[in-house]
Image 1 (tube, rainbow, N blue to C red):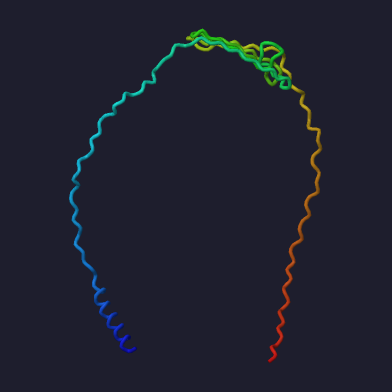
Image 2: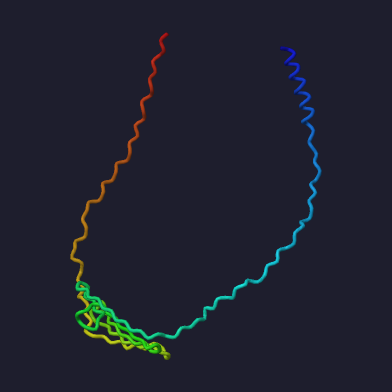
Length: 167
């Protein structure tokens, strides 16, 4: 047993003398890069042209909607609630629409758009109706104010009583 302990101590002493010295390494030497810079050629496609102009096309549309509960009238007759009509010959656009305003009047807009600009002829039908102001008819809310909380009362705990140990 003593021999094993002695052998272990000797091996530890030898190992510590080997590993206590710091290793030394030579600085690395790198070669210069041996490649040439890439050469890029110009793209092989032409730039897209966004300047394509199409000739104006003549068109005409007209729509109408009947909604009984809304009291809105965008139409050309009293039977329809919403409508708009517009037509164009490619150079001049004309149209008309009707709007019921919140005050009860009907606004009729006839418009024309051409190379000179946009021209609108606005007319009103009916009389403005404003409801008479009525004060609020409800009572102010009644509620009782919350009760104030009583201030907390701190009761000191009673001193603990320990019984004497019995042996």
